Image (cartoon, rainbow, N blue to C red; front, side, top):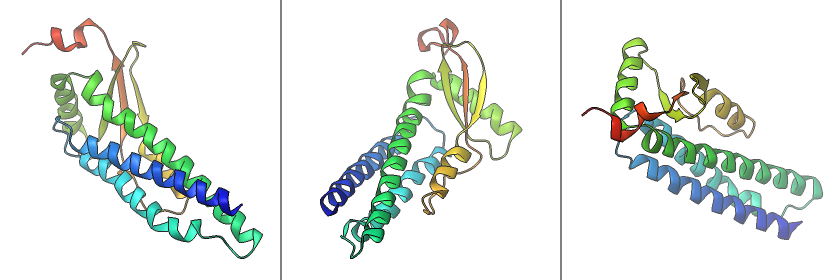
Length: 174
């Protein structure tokens, strides 16, 4: 079990660094949604917390119960980082790749006029429906289960809207 504990800790460390790098990319984005800085700060704090816990978790324990507890905690961290990484890839690509900047700015300004603390991640989609799905609450619940303090800012929601010829960058007015 000690060897598998070390291997699992190494996997968690790799996932942590990979997640931090991806959100660093989000922090370097070219679109002006300032509140996404708070979103990009979340995985950096999360990764920092997990990396600080790793030395104690990867050290073999004297008894099997403690060893099994460390193993379960490392698995939780690994799964959490995997999910946060997938969400980060989605966030990093949403406003940047699927939504023209003129549409993004307009929708964000509309939301800001209605909600003081409205934070949206925009996603043009081919299902031709509108949907509004909370993101922060779901992810924060998963973080709560690990005992870590990092949190996504709330409210943060995914706003999906129909994608079509009218939303493509080449057909947008200047």
